Length: 359
Image (cartoon, rainbow, N blue to C red; front, top):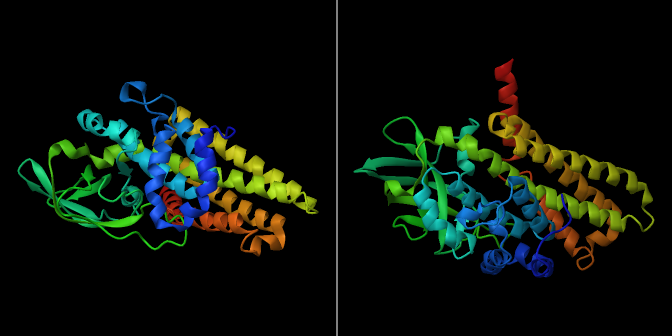
């Protein structure tokens, strides 16, 4: 990962507010405008679409830079930018044209909503939203139990929808103002609370064909899965770098024995970053998703080892309320990495099923 290339005012704000973003639900309203003001959502978006250009790995690095300061902010960044990516890769260019300006400027939130779909694609779960035909449109019913970046009254949400009356599925864009959409109160998380994470219930929600992101979910989802997962990897990369750096700084105080394992872990992190960049550059992850699954698993394991080494390097000070506050927050952040969908258990299950099928 490149050195922190964030706008200095954003980096300072994230650093100063990281504890609040982790603990205070009411701070969620500040995150999207701050990120948008630094123009981070435009990274990797073609200039013709209102962005600043760049490659998918540039998006990963930007999410990593934000996550190094605050995983809560990185989580919001991931959800919002991934929804933007769905529009960029949608054949429905009219929908993208309508929605992208407000999304890139942070005036409305974008939520991926496709965690269920990614598990469905790997054969791990049925789709939780169904549609029945009504004229040339659809009526949707279902529930998404965990969606991030659902800014109250101002969000767009992508959802994979199974046809109720025939095989197949499509991906639709829903909006906060749609009749029949009910957003729950924010989930009572142990950290990352300023992320507008809630459940969504759909009850007889009407959408027209102009709200369809992709008519064939089975064909389209593998094309966007590399962005979904690689942008997610940016969160792990940023947290791992920050924890390793904190451990290296603390290890100077009579804990030189940790220098070697910290150097080895930093090297292992660089290997995974290079593999991620190469897979994105070549497009290999679209046809070889298992390679991306393994990178995501490896990065989560690196995060766990990094936070453990930070604890050893910091010693008893890490257990003091004031002195250990930043470590305690990173510990909670690290605990989230294995469970974010698709979780490590789900990824390992998918890899095991693939191996069994090949055998």
